[in-house]
Image (cartoon, rainbow, N blue to C red; front, top):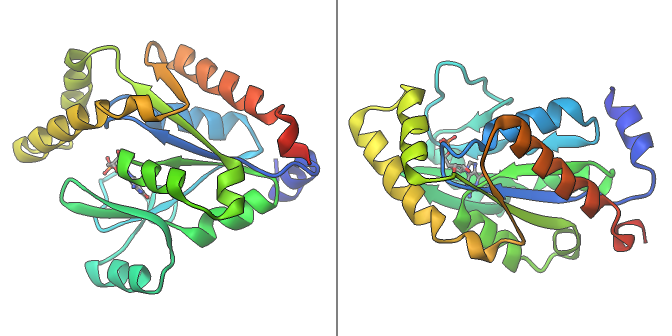
Length: 208
Ligand code: 5GP
């Protein structure tokens, strides 16, 4: 489906800002990839990061990979809707990469950490306040999380330890979210996400 036909389908509904958080290894990217692939009205918000790209990652598709200086310049210029330090790297969402899409009726998914989600919740911009929906994807248990993180194989010991620590810290924040999905199979996580998405789309306020 093209961008144009996506807009047409969306009619006069304002898009949503779907904030998806949860510890690394909980399955966020799998869920959001399936949602973006299967629903033409959904777009992924490509974040900026100072983290180096992993082998399979593509600049502009997975992230905008920036130098520390480029990130600092954008921060200084007020271009970020939210930003945070995660592990030893900086991450942030450009305001421009979500506002236009939402205005055009697309639902935008942000894969962001709990600090970024708190900033989105506190944001007074009427477009953001009206469109945000926050969802926490939680692993069934920490043993499973550890297994998934180890299976990635892209981590050295130090990165792995840092990720496990911040995963456990992130888990403490699930109560701040409107929705929680307890991770099960890929299909079940996807279905839970779509159930939330479809119900939220029916809210009368989104059509006014
Ligand atoms: P990774 O380095 O594994 O891609 O992501 C590490 C963490 O950073 C994940 O929990 C992810 O949700 C978070 N993250 C990715 N992009 C952003 C962003 O733009 N803002 C914030 N606050 N967190 C982000």
